[in-house]
Length: 326
Image: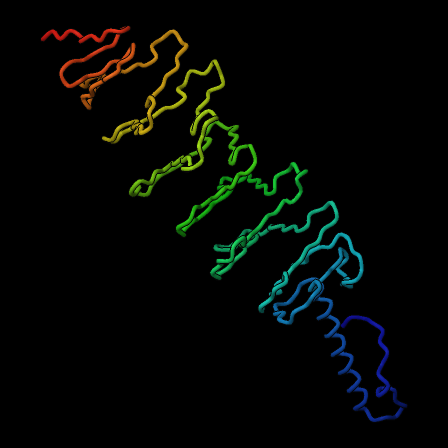
C-alpha cells in the first residue's frame, strides 16, 4: 500500500475503548481510498478502455510533460500525448481530439518501436460511413501559409517496401492532383539507376482505356507550350534513345490518329545523319502507302501513291517514279 497522509472524516474520530469494529471499518476505508488513488494515477499514464459520450466544449484531456493534468483555462506548453486505449464515441459536431501546438516541436509524435502484427498499423484512420458531403476527406493536410516552402506531407522510407501504397477498389482515380500553380503537378526526381516511373498493366484494358492517358480537355484551347507530351534529353553526351518502344504483340508499334489539318509527324532535324531510318530484318517492306489519295494541290517535296503510280512533287512539277518491272 502506498504511503500518504489523509485527514479522517469526523465520523472516524473516536475515543480509546470504542469497539474493535471501528478499527476494521477504518482499515477498510483506507484500503478503498488507496485503491482509488492508484486508479487516478494510473489513468494519467495509461488510460483504461472507456467511452466518453457526453459532449464538451473544451479539450477532453490535457496532460503536461510531467504527466500532470492541466486546467483548460491555464496557458500551457510542451503537451505530450501519453499511451492510451481510450475511445471516444457518440455523435459529435466538434473534434474529438485537438492538438494546438504553438511551439517549435512536433504537434503529434508516434514512435512505433514494436513489430506490428498482421493488419495493424502505427497510425490508422478508419471509416465505414458513406461520405458524400462536398469538400470532406478522411484525412486532410492543410498548409495554409503562402510563405511556407517545406512540404505539406513528407514520407521518408529506409526500408524496401513502398513509400506509398494505394489499394483503390472504388471506381474513382487512385490519385487526383489539382494543380493551380504554374509548376509541375507531379515531380519525380530519380537519383538511382532504376525506373523514374514504372506502370505495370496487368489488367486487360477495355474500350478506349489506356495504361497511360494524357488528355487536353476540350474547350481549353492550347495555343502555347511545348506540347501535350514532351521528352527532352538534356545531356549532349547521351547515346541512348529518348523514346524506346518494344512491341512483342501483333499491333502497331506506334499509331497516330491525326484528325486536325496538319502533319501527323513533324521532324526537325539538324544532325548529319538520316532524319528517318527504317531497318527491316524480316521479309517486309520498309514503307507502305495506303489510302490512294488524289492530291489536288501538291507542294514541293510531297510523295504519295495514288493506287497506280508512286508520285513525287519537285518544284512546280509532279513526276511519276519510274516503274521498271523486275
